[in-house]
Amino acid sequence: MDVPRLRIVLGNHPHVMPLKRGEVRSNLFELEFIEYTPTNTAFKPMVREQAFDVCEMAIVTFLMAKAYHKPLVLLPAAMLGRHQLAYAIYNGEREVLGPGDLEGKRVGIRSFTTTTGAWIRGILANDYGVNLDRVHWVTFEDPHVAEYRDTTERAPAGRKIVPMLLDAELDAVLGETASEAPLKPLFPDPAIEASRWFARHGAIPVNHLVVVTAKLARERPDIVRELYELLKRSKAAAGPAASPDPIPFGVEANRRSLDLITDYAAQQSLIPRRFSVDELFDPTTHGLN
Image (cartoon, rainbow, N blue to C red; front, side):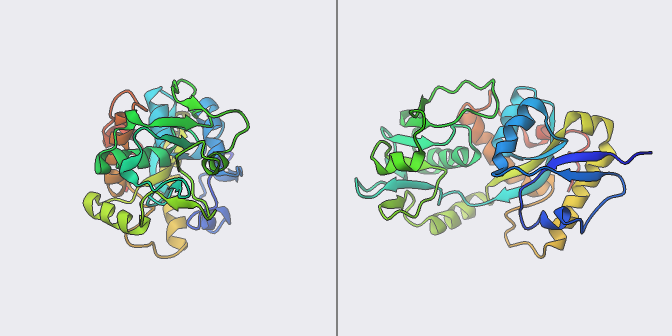
């Protein structure tokens, strides 16, 4: 019997490299790695066309895909997790801004549906009392999920987000970092604020996990389970995880972070209703730990 060959897109994360180098492998299937730079450019074809068998995916993109019944299945295998607060900046030459000062301001973000943006907006609303409806959002890209109706202002064609901030056409920007001298972090000490947020909420925000097509999960659940085990072995081969682990594996290890981002996505009307964490997984992936 021919061994199936899976088309797969994963970023070049340290915990993925043992798998990409072939140091861990399976007898059940072969992997054909498709490279996308940056990795997030693969999300749209995966959501819209199921262009690959396996793909890294931002969690908000997956939540929206699920809301619109896209045939994708989530694996509880984190590819990217990080504290988000360093990814909010403003132009310090114009005025001094803090996280509670964004109401009435023009705030740029690559797409309103980005996961980093959803995390930061959720933190602003729930931890700093910002009314997100009173912020004037300016976006630059379409969402990955075509059915979502984006009502934000679209930046002029060809304009870039950080130059618009420098030119005072935006008051602040989410989802970006910059080294230009006038640009300052919206959270005065992002590391300290992140530490306090972690103490309150008990999670490091997860950005990217892994999805497979529903067809693969339905027809070859054994391959899906084996793929998850390979990802775990690759992570173990890459060396000890940090503590706390920003890239947890398993439903229970990801539960708190998934609870929070699902809350935030529903609050921001990115999804029409809140999903429970258990709803995010199918019978094959629900028990993975």
